[in-house]
Structures are given as C-alpha cells and as structure tokens.
Image 1 (cartoon, rainbow, N blue to C red):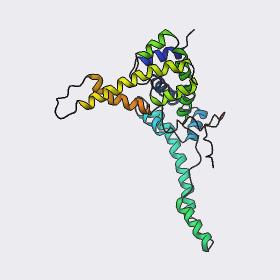
Image 2: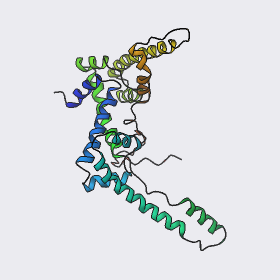
Image 3: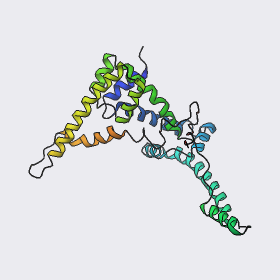
Image 4: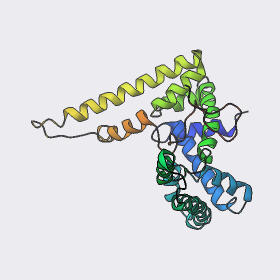
Length: 257
C-alpha cells in the first residue's frame, strides 16, 4: 500500500521546480505553522527554539511570508530578545570591570573585555533538523518509486531534481538500478534547460528582434533553483555531513586538526 509520501512526490512532480524541494518546503511551512499555532506555549518546544537561538535566516524569511504568523512570532522572539539582553548585560558588566593587574596581563584582560563575551553555544535550527531527517525519507521514496509506472511518469514530466538533491540521491542509491534511471531522466531535463538558455541568450543579439517562447523566458529562473536548490531547504544550517550521529540536537562535530 502506497503511503502519503508517494502521493506527495507525485503531486510535487506536477509543480514547477525540484519535486523534493517542493515536498520539503511544504514540510517546513507545516512545521513552522505548528510551532506558532500549537506549540508556541509549550515549554519544551519553546526551550528547543531558545537553545537554537531562533530559526536560521532561511526559515525566518519563510516565516515572514506566512499568514497569521505575527502573534506566535512575537511570543517566541520576545523570549529570544530577552535572552539576548541577558547576554549583553553580562557582556556590559565584563567590559565595565576595571583591570586590577598591571603589565601584559592587564593588556590581555582589556583586549578580551573589548571583544566582549561570546554568545552562548547554540543548537541547530529546529526546522533544519526536521528537514534533514525527512529529506532522506523523501529521497529513498523517490528512488524506490521510479520503479513504478505512476511516479516514473510523473518524474519524467517534472522539471527534475535540483543538483544538490540529485547528488544526495545518487549517493544514497549507491550505484544501483534506481541511480541509472534517475541519471537518464535528469540528464535529459538539464540538457533541454541548457538549450532553452542558449536560445534565450542567442536571441539577445542586437541584430535580431527577440521573440522568446515561454520556456526560454523563464529558463533562467528555473536554472537558478535547479543549480542551487530552494533557500528554505538548503538554508545556512542544513549541513548534512557534519552532524554527530545519534545526536538529536544536531550539534556539529569539532573541526579536524
């Protein structure tokens, strides 16, 4: 029996852009909506957001576009700003403390106070964590679904995967039969898009009067989304490889020396 994930992928293939980005963007919107409408007064949910220092820039931008987000955002971010004020109170206190030592120790102390105290360590954006986990499920669902007529046909008619999701899918497919089908399907789409871009550029020749087809006129926008992926899905905290295995907080590993 096919699950909801299969049907969401089929529906996403009918919309413009990468179908995986489309599915995950919807998930991000649902998650943000749930946080603001259902969990905004839940102490555990608010504590999780506080530990992350709020949402990352990409998901904060998505939040600004959501209807009826004002009250929930105000409740959450008032607490975050109070938290920031406590940090600045501590920083101001450290800057105001007079040096009691002389010589180079006093110079080092003044330099450290001038820099101020660093912000407390923060965990990863909760929406980024949610998407990173769901992304693997959607990628595996797409790879398996390409063996079925319905999803294979839907993907064939779609704009195809963005390059970041294509790379992730091929890595998870590990060279199996699903990978070959995905490569063939996606290569055709990228070649067609590249041809549309070439014709769009050629028609800007000063010796011609440009008459663009709809595909040619919109090809540059599609190219942006397929090369980079959607901002809400590949936000600043959506790193996949530097998360400590089994760590639900998503704290990054210490850099190798």
